[in-house]
Length: 210
Image (cartoon, rainbow, N blue to C red; front, side, top):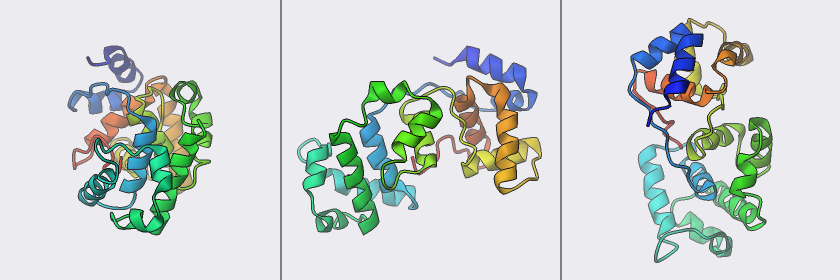
């Protein structure tokens, strides 16, 4: 079911965004995902093509028969060589172990994390080696389907807003301008980001590395 209240709010407060939504395809809410698993996949996908990420993820899952679920203790028990054999870099192998260790310590509790503010959530996850602010925001928007996250640092959102709002700033000045524009989108900034991604020429709705 579409979030009609969100669409009506965004269209009313921002005619430019309203036109983007009107010209776009319907975006439906997604089921919440396993945050631990989503984090592992995000790390595997970083800085490589979608096709390569899918192949490495499949080989990684094959290390955990019969269901392919990478239980944290099993991930921690693997050697670096075993992880590198499926196509992971030494750096990414370390990041996956850091996520598994974080989960083993009970620090990826779903109920706790979903109760945090956007900034507190980001600070919590970026304490994990290899997890940055962008990854934390993508997990909030997609894995948790939280409604009010604004990814001002995402290149796709930046390109879309430069295109639709005629923004000429770059760097931090651009992000500050974007944050000001997006203020009226609260409490539905996540859906706004999804429509902005979708509006790009390549039709991407979800960043390919998530």
